[in-house]
Image 1 (spheres, helix red, strand yellow):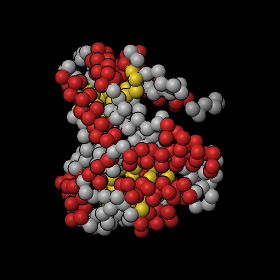
Image 2 (cartoon, helix red, strand yellow):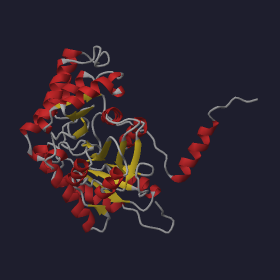
Image 3 (cartoon, rainbow, N blue to C red):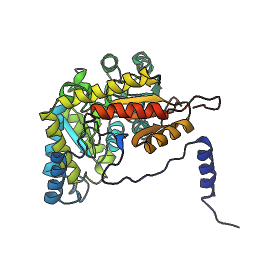
Image 4 (tube, rainbow, N blue to C red):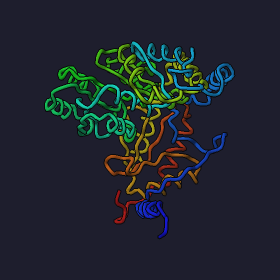
Length: 386
């Protein structure tokens, strides 16, 4: 009898290849060779000299790693400083820093729900929210995208603790959630509102204070935010922001906080350095939005189908998954990196190029980007089906 417990993997690999869904790692060099419209470096801070110097200084002073979970040895004065600065900048009472935005979403969802509670989750939410809902053991209702009335209906059918969760800016199409309407639904149902502001921080709100600040909801008693330090702040890690009692509850109950090694000091220092730049140069947020609008306007003007951006994500539709992969590859050959979103990463099954509108892109680079995307755009054929 042969022993081949992983033969099923070969069949899965053939299925992915047939569907045009094979993903591969592509290590990049330290010095960028391509015009970058693929990263999440919205404000152009990941290589900013103040940010890299702050990261290096933190590593020299505190060491290469946090040395343990934050409840043991992994919490430094630097972590506490970043938490104070994040909470103050975004308008919340308290904050808790974790090792990633993914871990932050899992922490918030699992700690603020439970077996007898209800989570109402937007159909377009990020995978980390989907996984957090699964791990929470709560009843989960998936509401149609950006539909506060559907959220209210789900709350009305439940008797007990409830929570609505949404991205502030959806990572696939770059559209913004109707936060004021969702907040009103939650208030009416005595439910909490959890907002993942990963793509809003640094781009929306006065000086980039985020989508909740822009909506006048930051610091509300029933409002909790999660965010990542790896996008506008150019570093790595995540955080949960909210009332102090919520943060204390997470410290005591959130497994992705309690049992995970603390965020490395260099990442903490880099995020602090970036936050200092954002405070001093609030115009970066508006510039990122202006670049996004310029990309959208010029791409649609040449006949491409793009979604009007609410923040710094610009989505351009492709006729199929294979066409999207070829399009992204042709852009790379032409000297530009773009994101390529295909099923199952896209909830509606429509494949796309995803462009990052960075605040540090020049007018010449915007013109080059539009020309490259237009020149490499695939033609629709009868065989193209997303």
